[in-house]
Image (tube, rainbow, N blue to C red; front, side, top):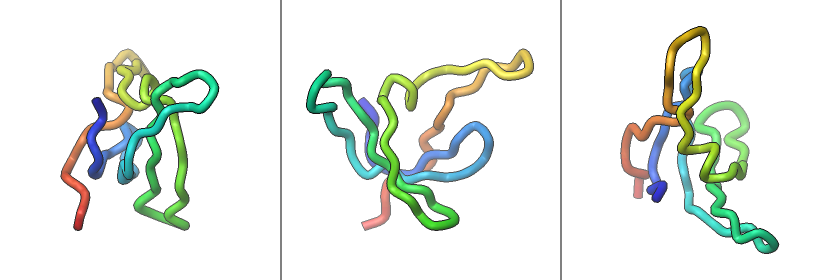
Length: 72
């Protein structure tokens, strides 16, 4: 399960997971999150993509790494 809080993308930018939700048609778990930079946009991404391990230039990374709990 993906918990709310702050995460760092493997490219360096930070995001806050607000909550998870289910797609109304497929029931796929989705992550609702916001950018912690720029316009602070709200986005959604399949949980399977959020939590995946990726490979770039021969190195393996978590797409997003948990860094701290959300602020109250």
